Length: 58
Image 1 (cartoon, rainbow, N blue to C red):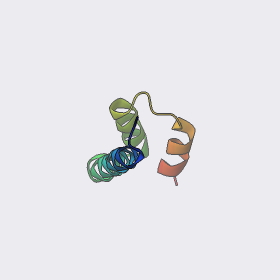
Image 2: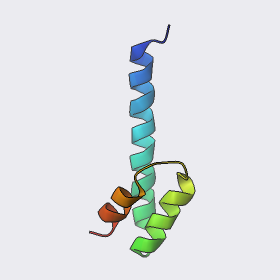
Image 3: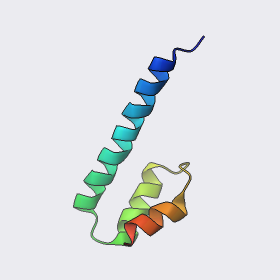
């Protein structure tokens, strides 16, 4: 049986890493396109590219 508490901790850790990666890339990438491409490179299987693009290009 899977411990739901462990699942929650894993999900929080993965979300934190995803957000930390975004913060790092915002500091290093020069353009929205560079940021978007770097995110896709780091997370090629992550869904929601349209949402990522919409958020990045605001």
